[in-house]
Length: 74
Image 1 (cartoon, rainbow, N blue to C red):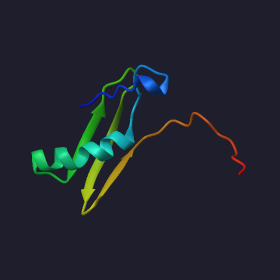
Image 2 (cartoon, one colour):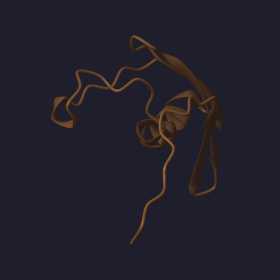
Image 3 (cartoon, rainbow, N blue to C red):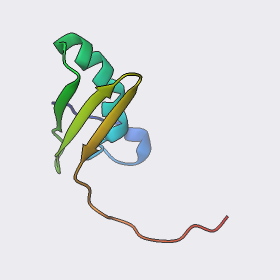
Image 4 (cartoon, one colour):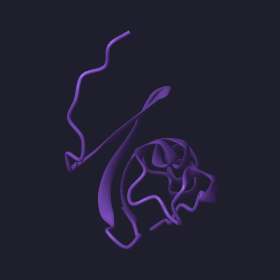
């Protein structure tokens, strides 16, 4: 279980943050002696993340909500 606060992003708390769990997974995997972890981010919306340590990579998956659709022109 985790929570992630970053006031500089304009909000009080990030709903569910895959990038933070990508950073936390190697630490937690070592502490628990596991390569697959189930994480829950306990924000107001909340969400489950499935994290797997695979050699030098962290695979994070879960369910997402589409909140924006558009086109970027460069």
